[in-house]
Image (cartoon, rainbow, N blue to C red; front, side, top):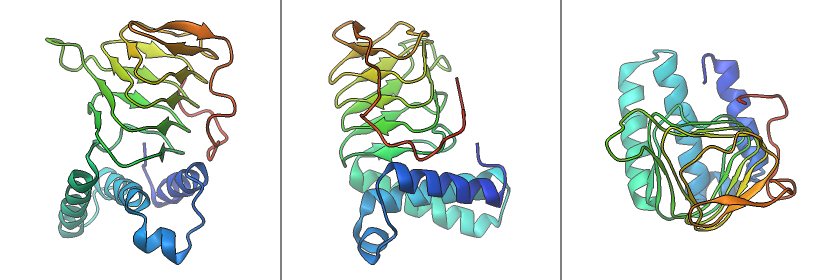
Length: 192
């Protein structure tokens, strides 16, 4: 979680590296997904460090408006540094979920609670790849270096990490894990 201006800058840099951005004029002005991620990190900083309420409200308004345009419902303080959102499109994340560093997230992903269990959301480790259409829900834990296949339905824990899971319901389909599927913008352990 961002707790200082240095953390804010570190998270932004990790996100930039993980998302293959180079801070060109094109990326800064015309890449709406990168703009969304920058607004998310700014809002986390302003909220967690209790900065100017007017700037915080304005940033929140811009963040929510751009999120609606892109189809994202992503609350703040869920993702660790090194987040990479691959495409615009529906992404829904519960505010109680916790996701580690270097997460690559694709379109039509849902990370939420099981019906009737508010507050019991997934905890996902560092260096995880979440494929298009994956549904991850319930009071579960996903270990580090896990790749979650397209359209997988994950409703049980895979704590061991370093595996690829897929299917409905998800099972281990490979021992490969997320190696080669994402860029590591953040190199220290963040969440296990």
